[in-house]
Image (tube, rainbow, N blue to C red; front, side, top):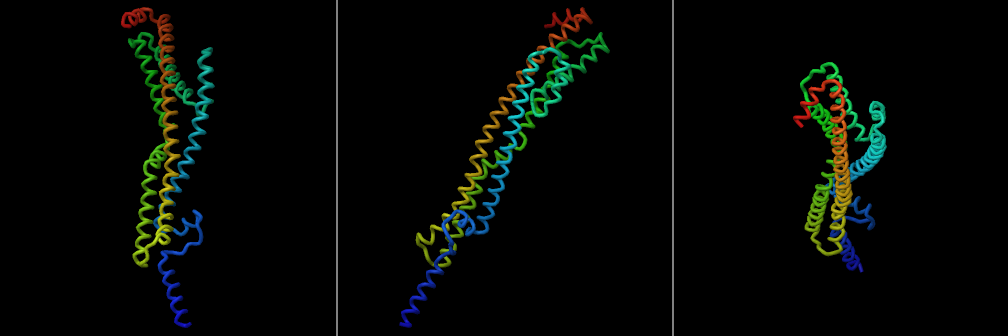
Length: 266
């Protein structure tokens, strides 16, 4: 009897030593807690990237919604074209709209050039020169708005392209550690190998969870930005045509000879 009990104790001890680690359950949380230090570090990095991406997604969705709403409201005001000084004052009330900012830059340059014509009515500059100055000011505003819309999107692109590989690194590291423990314990069967591999694969799953929303959101916001750019460039063309007509009208009252020369050049 004593010999049988000793043999049973040795077999039980061997089974304990053959297991790479003790498991308290099969939930995902318990598998994460039982993972190695490196896998936990990888999961922490992926969690931080995921939280950062979701924060950017929320803030950008809010910004784009407000920008589009204010731009549409301003466009309706601009299309009335009743009084541009009033529209200019109204444009200062829109903080998020991209069209009000572009109009503000163009109208400011237009007012500056208007004062220069009044101070130097005999200037040799043509209408196209004035219109070009207004267009450059508005193009600068478009670039500024594009950069504002695109700010922080690099994190979405970086997460979408690197998160799967970061998760794969954690998986490879976890599997390597599991096989190392199996070699040290001298036991290799499915019951021993499967738990360690399943815990290591959580890193790959976490990488995909962080990458997929980031890629989808980045593509969505990039398409919205392209649409905003097209809308702003169309607005610049419309405003520059209006400025050109207005300059011709003003110059016709100030310098009839210059208007004739401009008409010949055109």
